[in-house]
Amino acid sequence: MYDYTQWNHIFKLDPNKDITDEELELICESGTDAILVGGTDGVTLDDTLSLLVRIRRYAVPCILEVSNLEAVTPGYDFYFIPTVLNSTDPKWIVGMHQQAMKEFGHLIHAEELVMEGYCILNKNCKAAELTKSDTDLSIEDIVAYAEVAETLLKLPIFYLEYSGTFGPIEVVEEVSKVVSQTKLFYGGGISTQKQAEEVSQYADTIVVGNIIYENLQEALLTVKAVKKGATK
Ligand code: 1GP
Image 1 (cartoon, rainbow, N blue to C red):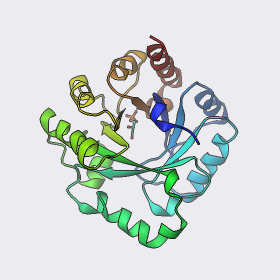
Image 2: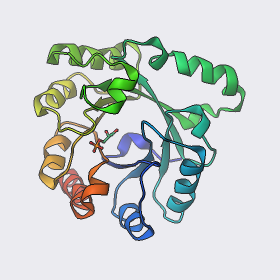
Image 3: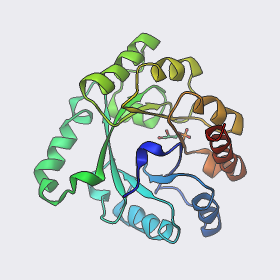
Protein backbone atom coordinates (compact mmCIF):
# COMPACT_ATOMS: atom_id res chain seq x y z
CA MET A 1 0.00 0.00 0.00
CA TYR A 2 1.20 3.51 -0.82
CA ASP A 3 2.34 5.91 1.92
CA TYR A 4 0.43 9.15 1.28
CA THR A 5 2.21 10.84 4.19
CA GLN A 6 5.32 11.04 2.00
CA TRP A 7 3.68 12.73 -0.95
CA ASN A 8 4.73 16.29 -1.82
CA HIS A 9 2.83 16.88 -5.05
CA ILE A 10 -0.62 15.84 -6.23
CA PHE A 11 -2.45 16.62 -9.45
CA LYS A 12 -6.21 16.94 -8.96
CA LEU A 13 -8.27 15.95 -11.99
CA ASP A 14 -11.89 16.97 -12.29
CA PRO A 15 -13.95 14.10 -13.74
CA ASN A 16 -16.32 16.74 -15.13
CA LYS A 17 -13.59 18.26 -17.34
CA ASP A 18 -12.15 16.86 -20.57
CA ILE A 19 -8.55 15.76 -20.85
CA THR A 20 -7.01 14.09 -23.91
CA ASP A 21 -5.03 10.85 -23.71
CA GLU A 22 -1.84 12.74 -24.58
CA GLU A 23 -2.39 15.28 -21.79
CA LEU A 24 -3.26 12.54 -19.31
CA GLU A 25 -0.06 10.68 -20.16
CA LEU A 26 2.02 13.81 -19.48
CA ILE A 27 0.27 14.30 -16.13
CA CYS A 28 0.58 10.68 -15.02
CA GLU A 29 4.22 10.40 -16.09
CA SER A 30 5.21 13.81 -14.76
CA GLY A 31 6.75 12.51 -11.54
CA THR A 32 3.81 13.67 -9.42
CA ASP A 33 3.22 11.53 -6.35
CA ALA A 34 -0.44 10.83 -7.01
CA ILE A 35 -3.53 11.69 -9.00
CA LEU A 36 -6.55 12.81 -6.98
CA VAL A 37 -9.86 12.56 -8.79
CA GLY A 38 -12.43 14.97 -7.45
CA GLY A 39 -14.67 17.89 -8.21
CA THR A 40 -17.46 19.88 -6.66
CA ASP A 41 -20.25 19.50 -9.18
CA GLY A 42 -21.35 17.33 -12.06
CA VAL A 43 -19.32 14.36 -10.79
CA THR A 44 -20.91 11.14 -12.09
CA LEU A 45 -20.15 7.46 -11.64
CA ASP A 46 -19.43 7.08 -15.37
CA ASP A 47 -16.85 9.87 -15.22
CA THR A 48 -15.03 8.66 -12.07
CA LEU A 49 -14.94 5.14 -13.47
CA SER A 50 -13.67 6.06 -16.91
CA LEU A 51 -10.98 8.36 -15.49
CA LEU A 52 -9.87 5.55 -13.15
CA VAL A 53 -9.51 3.13 -16.06
CA ARG A 54 -7.52 5.68 -18.08
CA ILE A 55 -5.19 6.56 -15.16
CA ARG A 56 -4.60 2.86 -14.44
CA ARG A 57 -2.55 2.59 -17.65
CA TYR A 58 0.18 4.28 -15.63
CA ALA A 59 2.01 3.34 -12.42
CA VAL A 60 0.97 6.46 -10.47
CA PRO A 61 -1.24 6.07 -7.34
CA CYS A 62 -4.84 7.08 -7.91
CA ILE A 63 -7.21 8.40 -5.26
CA LEU A 64 -10.86 9.29 -5.31
CA GLU A 65 -11.93 12.31 -3.29
CA VAL A 66 -15.48 11.48 -2.38
CA SER A 67 -17.87 14.37 -2.85
CA ASN A 68 -21.04 12.47 -3.60
CA LEU A 69 -21.94 8.91 -2.83
CA GLU A 70 -23.41 8.12 -6.23
CA ALA A 71 -20.01 8.54 -7.88
CA VAL A 72 -18.04 6.09 -5.72
CA THR A 73 -16.54 3.07 -7.45
CA PRO A 74 -14.14 0.36 -6.23
CA GLY A 75 -10.60 0.18 -7.60
CA TYR A 76 -8.98 3.37 -6.35
CA ASP A 77 -5.91 3.12 -4.09
CA PHE A 78 -7.41 5.42 -1.46
CA TYR A 79 -10.66 7.23 -0.81
CA PHE A 80 -10.08 10.68 0.64
CA ILE A 81 -13.09 11.80 2.65
CA PRO A 82 -13.45 15.54 3.17
CA THR A 83 -14.93 17.02 6.30
CA VAL A 84 -15.33 20.79 6.07
CA LEU A 85 -14.26 22.10 9.45
CA ASN A 86 -15.41 25.66 8.77
CA SER A 87 -18.77 24.73 7.27
CA THR A 88 -21.79 26.20 9.02
CA ASP A 89 -23.88 23.19 8.01
CA PRO A 90 -23.31 19.95 10.00
CA LYS A 91 -24.15 17.96 6.89
CA TRP A 92 -20.68 18.77 5.51
CA ILE A 93 -18.90 18.11 8.80
CA VAL A 94 -20.33 14.72 9.81
CA GLY A 95 -23.85 14.46 8.36
CA MET A 96 -23.10 12.92 4.97
CA HIS A 97 -20.50 10.69 6.61
CA GLN A 98 -23.05 9.29 9.01
CA GLN A 99 -25.44 8.62 6.13
CA ALA A 100 -22.66 6.93 4.16
CA MET A 101 -21.79 4.66 7.07
CA LYS A 102 -25.44 3.74 7.52
CA GLU A 103 -25.75 2.75 3.88
CA PHE A 104 -22.29 1.44 2.96
CA GLY A 105 -20.49 0.84 6.29
CA HIS A 106 -20.45 -2.91 5.76
CA LEU A 107 -18.69 -2.54 2.38
CA ILE A 108 -15.94 -0.21 3.49
CA HIS A 109 -12.28 -1.18 3.90
CA ALA A 110 -11.19 1.16 6.67
CA GLU A 111 -7.52 1.14 5.62
CA GLU A 112 -8.42 2.72 2.28
CA LEU A 113 -10.19 5.68 3.87
CA VAL A 114 -8.34 8.87 4.74
CA MET A 115 -10.14 11.80 6.32
CA GLU A 116 -9.21 15.30 5.18
CA GLY A 117 -10.05 18.22 7.45
CA TYR A 118 -10.81 21.00 4.98
CA CYS A 119 -10.70 24.68 5.72
CA ILE A 120 -12.22 26.37 2.66
CA LEU A 121 -11.04 29.95 2.38
CA ASN A 122 -11.90 31.35 -1.04
CA LYS A 123 -15.40 32.64 -0.46
CA ASN A 124 -16.11 32.75 -4.22
CA CYS A 125 -15.30 29.12 -4.96
CA LYS A 126 -18.07 26.61 -5.63
CA ALA A 127 -17.07 24.43 -2.68
CA ALA A 128 -17.40 27.36 -0.24
CA GLU A 129 -20.87 28.18 -1.54
CA LEU A 130 -22.04 24.59 -1.55
CA THR A 131 -20.82 23.84 1.97
CA LYS A 132 -21.80 27.25 3.39
CA SER A 133 -18.28 27.72 4.71
CA ASP A 134 -17.46 30.59 7.00
CA THR A 135 -14.56 32.14 5.07
CA ASP A 136 -14.42 35.35 7.06
CA LEU A 137 -11.56 34.12 9.22
CA SER A 138 -8.43 35.70 10.67
CA ILE A 139 -5.08 33.89 10.56
CA GLU A 140 -5.62 33.02 14.24
CA ASP A 141 -9.01 31.49 13.39
CA ILE A 142 -7.48 29.38 10.63
CA VAL A 143 -4.58 28.29 12.82
CA ALA A 144 -7.09 27.24 15.47
CA TYR A 145 -8.89 25.02 12.92
CA ALA A 146 -5.52 23.42 12.16
CA GLU A 147 -5.06 22.80 15.87
CA VAL A 148 -8.48 21.18 16.03
CA ALA A 149 -7.38 18.84 13.23
CA GLU A 150 -4.00 18.05 14.79
CA THR A 151 -4.70 18.01 18.51
CA LEU A 152 -8.37 17.24 19.00
CA LEU A 153 -9.54 15.24 16.00
CA LYS A 154 -6.09 13.84 15.15
CA LEU A 155 -6.92 13.93 11.46
CA PRO A 156 -4.34 12.60 9.00
CA ILE A 157 -4.71 15.65 6.73
CA PHE A 158 -5.49 19.35 7.17
CA TYR A 159 -6.32 20.87 3.79
CA LEU A 160 -6.03 24.63 3.26
CA GLU A 161 -8.35 25.11 0.30
CA TYR A 162 -8.13 28.32 -1.73
CA SER A 163 -9.50 26.66 -4.88
CA GLY A 164 -9.24 29.05 -7.84
CA THR A 165 -7.17 31.69 -6.05
CA PHE A 166 -3.66 31.80 -4.61
CA GLY A 167 -3.89 32.17 -0.84
CA PRO A 168 -1.66 34.32 1.40
CA ILE A 169 1.63 32.57 2.05
CA GLU A 170 1.67 33.75 5.68
CA VAL A 171 -1.42 31.63 6.35
CA VAL A 172 0.38 28.53 5.09
CA GLU A 173 3.45 29.46 7.11
CA GLU A 174 1.53 30.02 10.36
CA VAL A 175 -0.51 26.84 9.97
CA SER A 176 2.64 24.83 9.28
CA LYS A 177 3.88 25.75 12.75
CA VAL A 178 1.03 23.98 14.54
CA VAL A 179 0.77 20.72 12.61
CA SER A 180 3.18 17.82 12.81
CA GLN A 181 1.34 14.48 12.92
CA THR A 182 -1.36 15.92 10.69
CA LYS A 183 -0.10 16.51 7.14
CA LEU A 184 -0.62 19.98 5.71
CA PHE A 185 -2.13 20.02 2.23
CA TYR A 186 -2.40 23.28 0.32
CA GLY A 187 -4.53 23.69 -2.81
CA GLY A 188 -5.59 26.77 -4.72
CA GLY A 189 -4.39 28.86 -7.60
CA ILE A 190 -0.94 27.34 -8.02
CA SER A 191 -0.18 28.24 -11.60
CA THR A 192 3.57 28.74 -11.75
CA GLN A 193 6.73 26.93 -10.72
CA LYS A 194 7.55 29.84 -8.40
CA GLN A 195 4.24 29.59 -6.53
CA ALA A 196 4.73 25.84 -6.18
CA GLU A 197 8.20 26.42 -4.69
CA GLU A 198 6.88 29.08 -2.34
CA VAL A 199 4.04 27.00 -0.90
CA SER A 200 6.17 23.86 -0.69
CA GLN A 201 8.40 25.54 1.85
CA TYR A 202 5.55 25.18 4.35
CA ALA A 203 3.00 22.65 3.05
CA ASP A 204 3.74 18.95 3.16
CA THR A 205 1.78 18.42 -0.03
CA ILE A 206 0.65 20.82 -2.73
CA VAL A 207 -2.42 20.07 -4.82
CA VAL A 208 -2.49 21.45 -8.35
CA GLY A 209 -5.80 21.54 -10.22
CA ASN A 210 -7.11 24.19 -12.63
CA ILE A 211 -3.82 25.03 -14.32
CA ILE A 212 -3.77 21.50 -15.81
CA TYR A 213 -6.66 22.58 -18.01
CA GLU A 214 -5.39 26.11 -18.63
CA ASN A 215 -1.66 25.71 -19.23
CA LEU A 216 -0.39 22.15 -19.11
CA GLN A 217 3.28 23.07 -19.51
CA GLU A 218 3.14 25.35 -16.45
CA ALA A 219 1.31 22.61 -14.55
CA LEU A 220 4.10 20.14 -15.30
CA LEU A 221 6.71 22.62 -14.04
CA THR A 222 5.05 22.61 -10.59
CA VAL A 223 6.21 19.01 -10.16
CA LYS A 224 9.77 20.03 -10.97
CA ALA A 225 9.56 22.85 -8.40
CA VAL A 226 8.53 20.54 -5.60
CA LYS A 227 10.90 17.74 -6.43
CA LYS A 228 13.79 20.18 -6.66
CA GLY A 229 12.87 21.50 -3.23
CA ALA A 230 12.71 17.99 -1.79
CA THR A 231 16.33 17.21 -2.67
CA LYS A 232 17.73 20.43 -1.16
C1 1GP B 1 -8.96 22.33 -5.70
O1 1GP B 1 -7.25 22.58 -4.08
C2 1GP B 1 -7.51 22.20 -5.38
O2 1GP B 1 -9.71 21.54 -4.83
C3 1GP B 1 -6.62 22.87 -6.38
O3 1GP B 1 -6.99 24.21 -6.59
O4 1GP B 1 -7.78 24.14 -8.94
O5 1GP B 1 -7.07 26.32 -7.88
O6 1GP B 1 -5.38 24.54 -8.48
P1 1GP B 1 -6.81 24.86 -8.05
